[in-house]
Length: 128
Image (cartoon, helix red, strand yellow):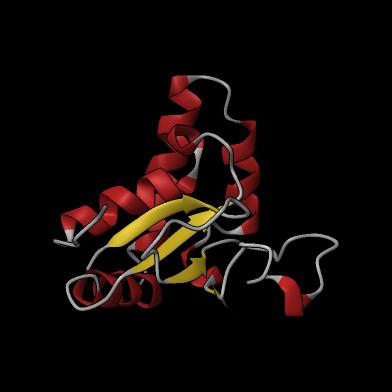
């Protein structure tokens, strides 16, 4: 039982479980009925995505300093009650069930899912 952090749209791993899309927008040009079939996500969880303005900042981050500023701001967003409670829930569920969460970004080290990984680990989540 654990959380797997994934890139949405990539083939699913064995035992991955339910895939949660922590993105602001659904995949372009893909009918809703095909999100899961095309390995994007089973359930959309936009509450764990950066706000639209912050997402633009993250995508524009070119330096380590820019990325650190994004991480700081995104972490602050995740401290808001709705997001914080959701992270607590996912951390607790990770000890009872297997599931995954992810984003479209190719490079996890410059993606908000790397920050989610850290925040979940701080909450004691089981992470693969």
